Image 1 (cartoon, helix red, strand yellow):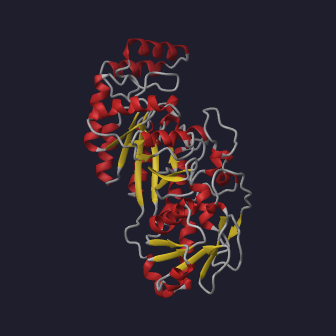
Image 2 (cartoon, helix red, strand yellow):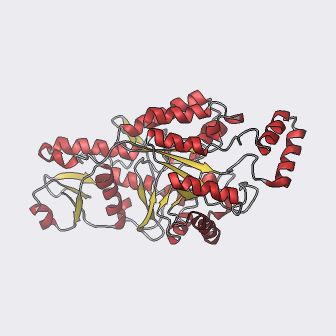
Image 3 (cartoon, one colour):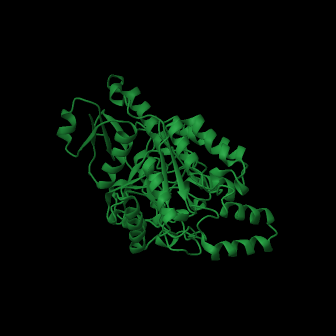
Amino acid sequence: MLLVYTHKITPRLTYIFKHIFTRILGVKITFTSKIEDFVAHEGMKISYTKQALGNEIFIKSNELLFSQGIDFVDITISQWDDLPCFFYTSANSLIKYDVFAASFYLMSRYEEYLPHVKDEYDRFPAEESLAFQNGFLDTPIIDHWAYKLRDALIKENVNEAHLFDNPDRTFQLISTIDVDQAFCYKHKGLIRNLGGVLKDLFQFKFSEILLRFMVIFKFRKDPFDTYSRLLYLQKKFQVPTIFFFLLSEYTTHDKNIPSRNMNYKLLIKNVADYAKVGIHPSYFSMIDELKMQKEKEKLENIVNFPIEKSRQHYLRLALPETYQNLVDLEIKEDYSMGYASQYGFRAGTCTPFYFYDLDFEIQTPLKVFPFAAMDGTFKDYLNYTPKKSYDTILNLAKKVQEVDGTFITLFHNDSVSGNGRWRGWRKVYENLLKELA
């Protein structure tokens, strides 16, 4: 048991200390603000405060974890050996940076509460983030800081090294699949298919017209119908796979087939028999709790069990409103924490964490699973080739493996088909599972 002395025990402090010590390093931890209890403790102990009490292991604190509300925070990035870091405190401290305050700043998404320019979809842009602007977005920096802190503590007190034995923490790959459009041509009805034919005709896409008719008349499989293959790969490589289904009404940004379509319902039921499923709340649900609730209930009525996993369509996430709504709807896990335009770790960590609501200064029951790589990021935003995308994703995974973290990918049922504009991407997905499973 590790004892932490601090002059003031706050929700922010207990939240981030437990993430770093318990969830990442596997160390049980307790807190005290009484000097006599700290002195009497015989195991490993550290003080996290403004001044050292004596000759104990001391980490000088920044004020962030003892504050409330949102204020502008002055940040200067510098190097902690081979890692970028901020909130320099003192050379007299065990470590010269307050990694707890820095981790809280990143993981709480503090910067997303501050004034910023949103992108065309009303999202917080990756390019506005501290991590992107300082070149560490592609690193689960909090986890690496935690491992560096562990090494410093062990060096200071070798006899307590056994506290950091953490056999339960191992590298894990989770594959997530967003189903924005269940089928390319099938079950879309006469009007939508006729509109599609006319559009292809005006664009001289005669091969698309031929393929459409071959699929409709059952001479060819629908190119987006990749579900049996995905389920086969899940079983073959024993990789947990989660499917997020879009069940909204048709809009400019939500173009799935109707949720009342029996073929769509049968598809969802079949997938749910073999894999985990979650709701993919629609484009306009970002701050609309009622819309989100209706879509969640639609999915629950189809699968006949409570839905506890969620990922926002277009990754439209407004903090804290979206997450507050998910908590109210009893969603337990969210997988929206990532960027569309850039790959990497939006919250600075590859370890699932509980959302901290800065509005109410509390840890919520919503567990956030941050993803690191999305197919559309490489294809549509960065214009990477499949080969370059594959190599980049492997490099991301390597940084997660170094800290025994959880690596989450985001693909779509159409991208893994390898057809059309996604030519070559089926191999990207399959080779990733083969390499990382």
